[in-house]
Image (tube, rainbow, N blue to C red; front, side):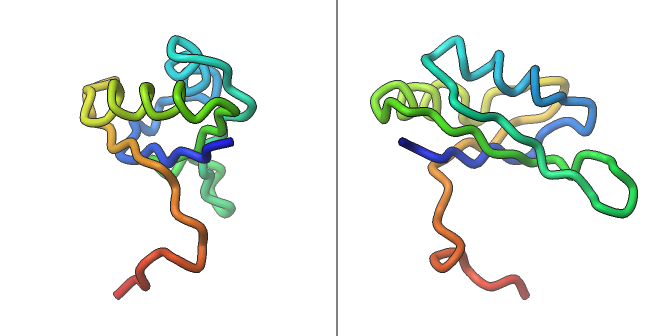
Length: 88
């Protein structure tokens, strides 16, 4: 199982859009967008879980830096919360 971070997304992107984009490369267990609790608006990033690491790595290499809805996406393996760098 691989958890994939997808950043720099259009605020118009839906979870279905995200899922469909990754399903072109393999099975997707879950696709979710981060939403602002106060406004309910998308925050411009999300996560995709794919059960097959080979398919997940192919999706990452294919979709990273691809332009979608006018924005160049950042796609990489998500780091566990403890490994992320602190925000300044």
